[in-house]
Length: 275
Image (cartoon, rainbow, N blue to C red; front, side):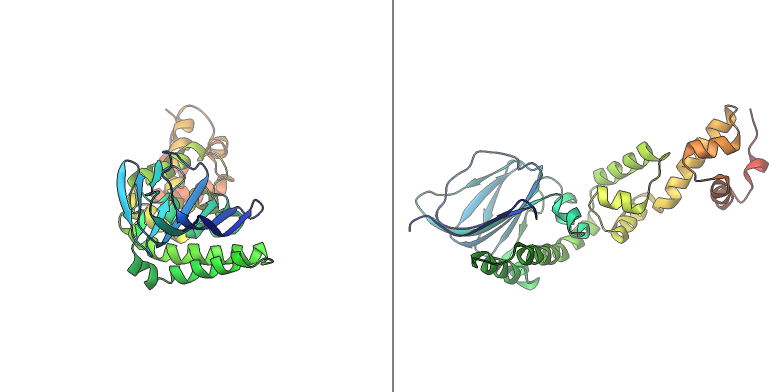
């Protein structure tokens, strides 16, 4: 079989690149696709992938997920034919298209972990049907890129339905630490659930769920505790309460007062005293 690009579609504006390949594959050098997330579906033949030093065998109708920070290479027998679909999505695709809640497959997996979605699961979650529909549009000469982009979002949604249950049960503690670190670094600034969710590519309900599960705090309560601790320290060093609450990130003294009362059941001036 002669090597053949059955379909190819790229869009810098929409942030994706797609190829349908049929023919004799080749082994690639180890590399990291910076700022790209790849979804690979094998249609025929057999392919191996080396991801983070782990050899992974791919069978027809399996889906392979490769993150932007995973060292990987394809291993293909140049004497045998294979056929596959490969979609590469820019990381900012999720933000531009308001679908960050579908990005758990990218950011919530450990390196070299859960890379393969087996064929039976691919079928169960309708992933293959969507992928092949996207391939159909890419074959059409004048198919609008916006239509293909819409199908990509649907594909990400279907893959995410499979991935999010695994993420919910074994979410990386390291990622929670990253979130906590970000909050601590920005606690005196204006910070919101939207800010945190967008930065870590998480849906707000899921962000709140895993944060509470791993820390015992809601995010808002954690931020309030950190800010109150800063007020206490500044006040003990001679700063007025009004100034200290502004410095710590509260909008005004009233916001600080309500947060402090909720945490301690006492008013700030009653329980705090200068050293």
